[in-house]
Length: 160
Figure 1 (tube, helix red, strand yellow):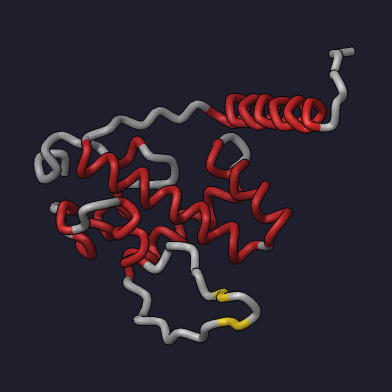
Figure 2 (cartoon, one colour; figure 1 turned 90 degrees about the vertical axis):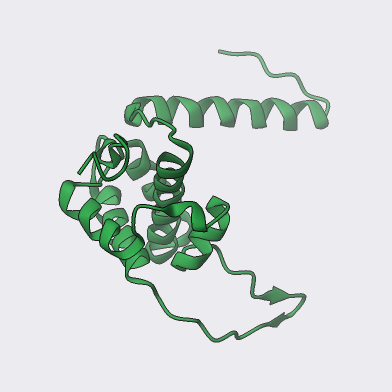
């Protein structure tokens, strides 16, 4: 399998097994350069967020269909959200708590598809850092936001 993709191993990505990688290969092929950006790739898969609001009116656009590859990424995302030790799962659970399970599955699937495209086209490596690193990054982000808001309001935060 590695010979087909020039030595790139997509099973490094969380949730992608040999079987799902083979399914993606049959749907997408080994040349993902036909999509010139990850945004276009995720849009084609049906994983890009919709922009159906224009002021007060909602645009009801007819969907073009759902490629099988997009469904494969959604299936992988469902299993990742249930996992307890993977950072993408923690991301999905965070979104699920705020926006619901459908949005969370689509967000995780989109993130996974972008990582897959970058790995196959750009040759970037992926290393799973785990849930602890993700939670620390979220904590640091929250601290920065609190400091910024306190400064805007004229307060100064001191750690306890």
